[in-house]
Image (cartoon, rainbow, N blue to C red; front, side, top):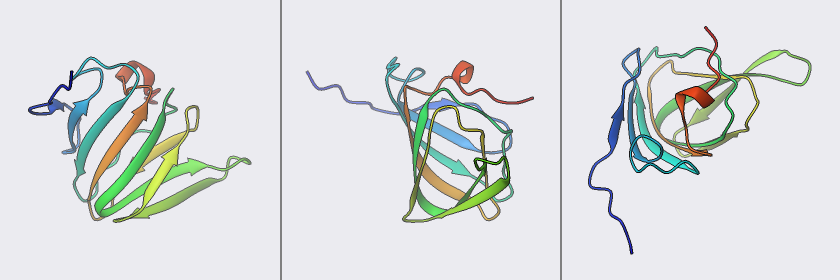
Length: 121
């Protein structure tokens, strides 16, 4: 039987970013996938992480910056603008940040979990 999600679960994060999880561990108890709407203010960033999930991110407004390493451990930044998407794979060392702010949707397989994010101190 279809199940309607009447409202997202708000996931607390530092730095002024909001996460509204519609499907996932915190909201619907699904462990296989998470779907969240995120709003990151200008100048927001988070620590590097090496997640144990693939993440598919669609930028709706603004621009998201994704810091990552190439195969020779050179640090690179990929800009993802409104109307574009980026896929990061499990095990890649990445960091998300903004200069001007961004609104985006993220889908994680398996579902996002803080214990699976692999955030660096």
